Length: 338
Ligand SMILES: N[C@@H](CCC(=O)N[C@@H](CS)C(=O)NCC(=O)O)C(=O)O
Image 1 (cartoon, rainbow, N blue to C red):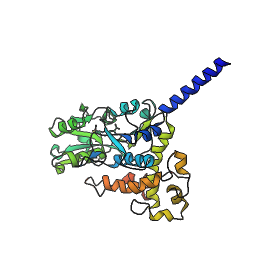
Image 2 (cartoon, protein in one colour):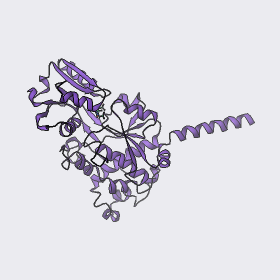
Image 3 (cartoon, rainbow, N blue to C red):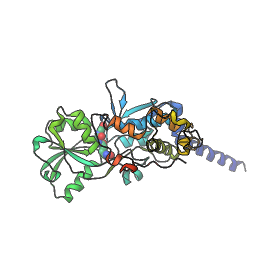
Image 4 (tube, helix red, strand yellow):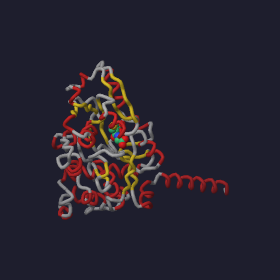
């Protein structure tokens, strides 16, 4: 009897330990900030501004998670990671969430020990060329030298596409982002291939004369980009997932950082539930009922974040396209908060 009791006690202890290890929310609360894995610097998506403050569409995912969990969007630490390092950093627990232009793929969602929490930018792989190359279509790239970064999905996608289109090319694969950019600028390769969003960002922020460069019209893949968490912590997955969904729902409901306070007296039950006026959604996530209010007030809705960072309010001027709300011809569709 005593033995049984002891083993049960040991089992319970083991259970508690395992649970504690996977309780990312408790760790974040204790630490006081979210560890957010980002790029080493990708203007519009995740890059430090002149004051060293990290800004961008992906940074707004970090900020939203900080606002939802700690009530303060500034309570996150950006952990810069190159493409190759990002999943190791997530697996090892160095970061709580990976928020950097990461394509959702079946392999990453299963075999890599990671799981995606939604899509914050629908993209596709493209090509950036110097206008001097005299090429206007990807089909003219036969014989080209192509720069790309180690640890990206871009390597395989390029190989698949080239095989299918009988395009011969020489890959130049480099681990550090700035070194790929330098190789391209120095003419060590004819073409830079990565997600079209990345190309727009590189062209504007890294090329001395952006007008000397052209993004070719072909998009050769689907690159749905979104935040990732570790497998095995469903509660944390839900928090990141619903932080993103809150920003989509806010846009659908017309709630912005500027007007959200006025909407606290709204009679729309969807608004009341999202803003915590009708309690429940916060408790379901183990968060304060103001979780979504804090996101909207401090970070803004998805559309605000998009326009400010990569859209018309930014140098990138990316069109909403697939990233418009579903009611406006895009794919952004807020899952119901109820
Ligand atoms: N979406 C693709 C590519 C994303 C990617 O890592 N792109 C490179 C651009 S060449 C990048 O963001 N590099 C930034 C860095 O390493 O800091 C993926 O998930 O593999």
